[in-house]
Length: 283
Length: 117
Image (cartoon, rainbow over all chains, first blue to last red; front, side, top):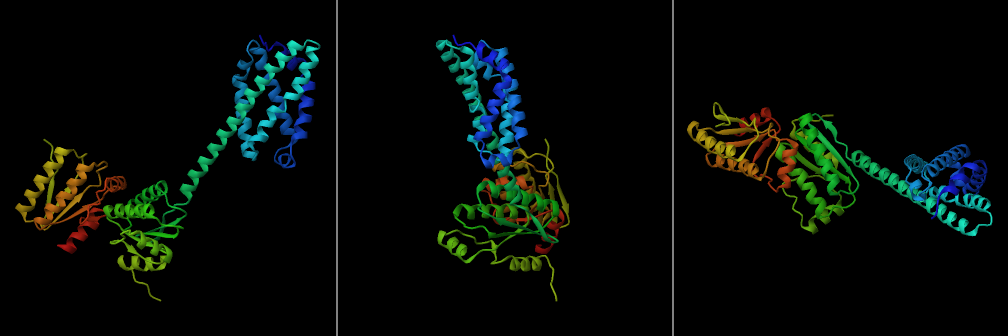
């Protein structure tokens, strides 16, 4: 049976030597770009902490080498490490190298310890490989998770950022839409616009689609839904910023925009809105 | 049995829905309102649904029906104060309530009614 006894004792006995060799390997593999993102002190600190945690984990569960990889403190440390690597802009390979580069110093130390006993050495090296691979995999999957969290958070922020409802005049709201319209975004726009209508008691809303690159049947349908919802609440809606190409597309697609006031630009829409609310502009 | 009160203001009738609508209540309101329009000879009906937070297709249909019945009895119907969530739900249900006059709140609804009546 492959016991972790030797690994644990090597980690304890040769801690200093392992640390020195590992750090040398780590700085050799580090690229110029990764050095700029992270100081040598920080790397050394992390390496030291990993060694301590690994030693503690293997010692506590040396009967079972995969059990050591399940150690809670060790796993949490690796997750935190992955997260910080994500924030510093490392790639997943660069993050994994941190664990895998520990193999060489550990194997060397094991060889020195086992001496001539080839059988014991082979089984110990297998055990060490299994252990480090498990830890490396965990690091990479934690890295992946942290990345995905980052992406979904950014997506949400973009959704919020890209749909501001602005007040143009007393009783006139405008939504300048920028970027592609999909169901999720239209939903957000619709909800925030309707909410704002209730809050401000505005009677007219202008949806400006100058920044929308293309309009297809789905987008047109979303727009019509928003217009209908606004009408149900007792507000009027004007769609502005329709570019010539979009006008052509809408007609070619056979989308019926009748009953919806449309204008070529925001200025025209504002003029109509001011007229309807009873304002007059004079120079 | 609970009923939704119908208030008379001159030529206009005012209905404020303050409770959650269920089907029975909706049917009752339809009945009461048509009778009231005919009896008082009302020219306009204002339905305030600002407290209504949930609708289903039945209630949506009912709102549409009441408005249609009012029109036949020669009374303009204005629905006021629809909540955003209700508006979105009705649109998603495909009930765009064509031909129904709407307003943001009671005040504006009244102004609209006075103009049309």
